[in-house]
Image (cartoon, rainbow, N blue to C red; front, side, top):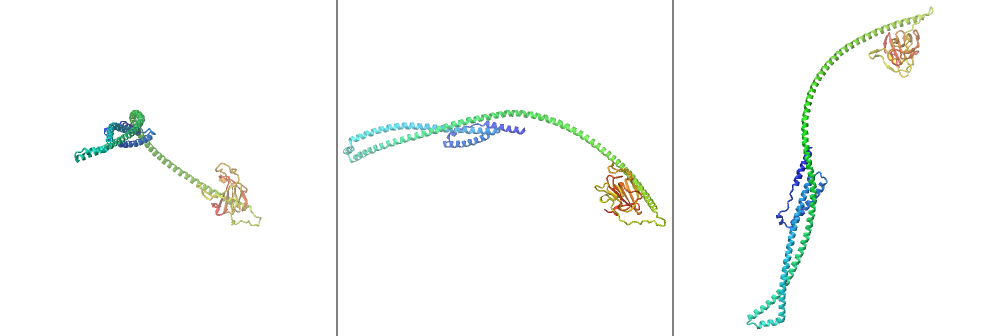
Length: 500
C-alpha cells in the first residue's frame, strides 16, 4: 500500500508541474531575428515536436504512465505554440515586406509617371528642337554663328556653345532611355518580389492553420489526460481516506497485537510453569520408574537365580534319575544277558559258548537317509545325548541294528505318532516307541521316536536286521530317528563310531 501511495503522489506532483507550465510567447526582442534565424529555430522545434510525437505515441499505448504522457503533451503544445508565434512573426515580416514592396511599387509608379511626364516633355522639347534644326539646317546655323561673331574669340565661343547644345541633346536622349529602362526593371523586380512574398505569406498562413489544428488536437489530448489526472486526484483522496482508515486499523491492530502479545506472554508463563511442574512430575515418575525397575530387576534376578537353582536341581535330579535309569538298565541288561545265557544251557557234557567282545564295525541305522539335523552335545541349554537323523520322506523308513546284539528293552505302546500336539506325550520316557540293544556287554544303542518296533526283549538281532520304522512318537515334532550310543552305560557321540 505504501509503494502505491508513493507512486500516485509522485505522479500527481509531476502532473501539477506539467499543468503549471506557462507557454511563453516570444517577446518584442525576437522581432529583431531574421527570417532565416526564425526558420532555423522553427526547424529545430519541428524536430523536437516530432520526437515528442513519437514519445506520445509510445506513452499513449501505456496510459498508466499519465505523468510522462501529460508532461510530454504540455511540452509539445508549448513548442507548437512557439512555432505558431514564430510563424506569426514571419507573417508580420512578410506582410511588412509586402507593404513596403507595395509602397515601393506605388512610389516607383508615381516616379515612373512623373519621370515619364518629364521624358515626354523632354521628348516634345527635343522634337521641337529637331524640327527647328531641321528647318534651319545645321550648316546655315554654323555659318550664322561665324558671320555673326565679332571676333575670333566670340566665334570660338559660339562654336563651342553650338557643340555643347548638340552634346546636350544627345545626353538628353541617353538619359531619357536610361531612366525608362531603369524604371521598367525596378517595376519588374518589385512585382517579382511582391509575388514571392505573397506566395510565402500564403504558405506561412497554411502552416499556421496546420499548427493551429495540431494545437487543438493536442489540447484535446491534454484535456483527456487532465481528466485522468482529476480522476486520479479523486482516487488519491479516496486512497488518502483509505490510508487514514488503514492507519486507524493499524492502530487497532497494534493495540490488539499488544493485547495478544500480553496474553501470549501470560500463557507462555503459565505454560512454563506447567512445563516445569510436568518436568518435575516426569522426573519423579522417572525416579519412581527406575526404582521400580531396580526392584523388578532385583526380583527378576532373584527369580532367575531361583529358577536356575530349580533347573539345576531338576537337571541334577534328571541326571540322578538318568544315572539311576542307566544303572537299572545296566542291571536289567546284565540280568537279561545272564538269563539269555542260562537259557542257552547246552546238553550235558557240552560247554556253553560265551561270545567274545565283537570287533564288528557299525553300519548306518537308516539306509538312504543320511542327514543329521541335530548333533550330540548341548542344545537349547540342555544336553542332547544322541544324534537326530531326518530327511524328506523319512517317515516310515526302515530302522536297522547297527551291530549284532541282544534286545534288552522295548517300548511299543505309544500311539502318539506325527500329528499330535507339539510337545512330549510322555510315553517311553519321552523316547516314545523305542528299542535298546546291548552289544557284547560293553556297548549299547538306543533307537527312539519309532513309529513301531518289530523286535521284542530277549531277541538276538544281527547287524542290518530290521528292528522297526521311523516315526514321531514321544517328545518329537516331526519324523526322525534319535540314536544314542553308550559305553558302559555312559552316552557318547555316535558319529565317533558310525558314519553315513
